[in-house]
Image (cartoon, rainbow, N blue to C red; front, side):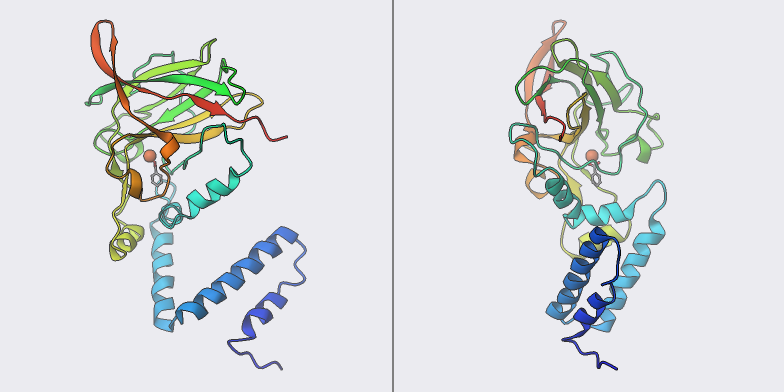
Length: 281
Ligand code: BEZ
Ligand code: FE
C-alpha cells in the first residue's frame, strides 16, 4: 500500500480520475484538484480554517432558493463571474460593444413595448431618455434588433426585491426601428448594494469591502446572425465605478447624461450606440 504524503497525495488523487471517459470533465477536474491542493499547501490551511469554510459554504447553500442565489453572489464578488464572461468573449471582434454581467435580477418574458415607453411607470425619480443605435461591426444599422432592458429603482431595489414596486417595473423590451434606433424613458438609476444580509455580505465585511455596484442599466440585445450581447451602461461620475463589488463595470461602457429637450421641456438623455458581433461560425 502506498504511503500517502503531502508530496504524493495530489498525484494519487489525479490517478483516481485517469479512467474518466469525458475528456472535458477530466481536464476541468484535474485542474481543480491541482489548484485546490496547491492552495491548501500555499496557505498551510488548518483543519479549523477548513471547517469555517465548510460552514460558510453550507450557509451559502441554506440561504439559496429560487429567489435568492447566494452562490452567484459568491462567484460575482470573487470576480469569477466576470472572469468567465471575459473568457467567453475573448474571440469577439474588438469593434463590438463589451459585455458585462447578467446578474441575478434578469427576468425573462417581459412584453415588447412601443419605442418611447416610460418603463418607470409610477416610480418617483428624475426622468431620463435612453437612446441610441444598434449596428453590426461593419456599422450597418440593425433594424428589428430586440433590446431587453432592466434596472433598479432609485431606492436601489429591483422589482423582484421590493414589494412596493409592481411586477415588471423598470423592465422593457423594444425593437429598433428601420434605422437601428431605439429610445425609451426611465428614471435615473442609482448605485445600490448587492444583497448583503447573508454569508456573502458577512464575507465582504470581514474582507473590508463594500457591497455597492455603480449606477447602471442592463441590456440584452439580440438580432439574427449576431451574437447576443449582454451588457450594461454605467453612469459617468459614479463613485463606485472603480470598485464595483462584482467587477462588472468597464470604461468602454460608461456613459454620461446630456441635456436634451422633448416637447419643449428639458430632460437628460443617456445615449449609447451598441455594436453587435457577428455570430460565431
Ligand atoms: C446586478 O447588476 O443586477 C447584479 C450583478 C451581480 C450581483 C448582484 C446584482
Ligand atoms: Fe444591476
